[in-house]
Image 1: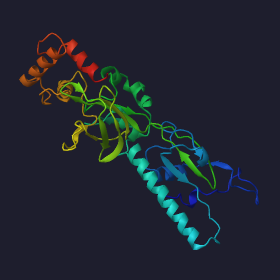
Image 2 (image 1 turned 135 degrees about the vertical axis):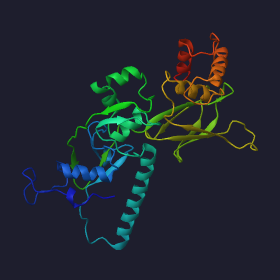
Image 3 (image 1 turned 180 degrees about the vertical axis):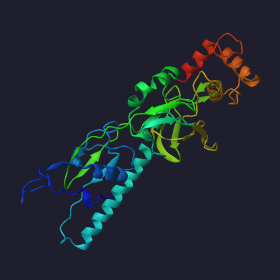
Image 4 (image 1 turned 45 degrees about the horizontal axis):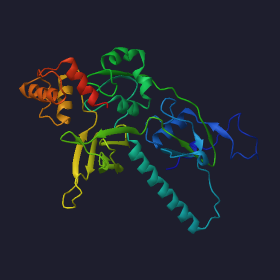
Length: 326
């Protein structure tokens, strides 16, 4: 992936005189060049001040998410064998960049500035990632005060909520000719934290493999309380966990599938039903407090030594929310 000739040094009052070495002189990208770099690295706001870190030279980079090159013509006297090696090296670097992009996240669709209507499965994290901004820049905006007061958790939004996306603030960055320059994105990856339970008993010290949207994200072992923590793409939609609960080789791995961002706020009937369902209670998500939901509430209240009413009182709502945050 190479940036075209438009990124090569152009004449300006700041450039050196004829014959002076330009290989280590940094210069700022023009607006047109910024757009071209954005298109090459995926168009997720990587050169914006809000979502990015400092641009560094190759020798200072650590775990870069995206790459941008300022290519110069190399010596034409290199033999064909060396050219082949260079091409193979570039292919390897491109494959690695693609793999890192899969883990870091790929924006499903850019979100421009202005009002955005939340859809099912969206969280502030996924919205901010697709908008090329950091979460606080959106959530703390004056136009989102009412939403922030209504939805205490920015990553538990209700479909139909309106979120204001402020415009990005472009920033100039100097790049060095004849070197690979690296942009490290700040708001990726996100972190997923899950707890595996078997009829209420934590599945501790269980080996697992986590996939998000069919891409393997991590392998590991749950802690004593059954928790697993893993980096995931900010815009991931479906998480799948394969784990070996029984040591008997004759038993296949258990497979659990989670729809990320699908839990509605706790003060919505659908949010209560989803939480009860995920905790193992027989409770369909209908959006209405029906007989099945009341029975699930009674069972939940009895299990956690609450007053058994079958109603969604403050104590029951608080306990449900606490279980999802512990």
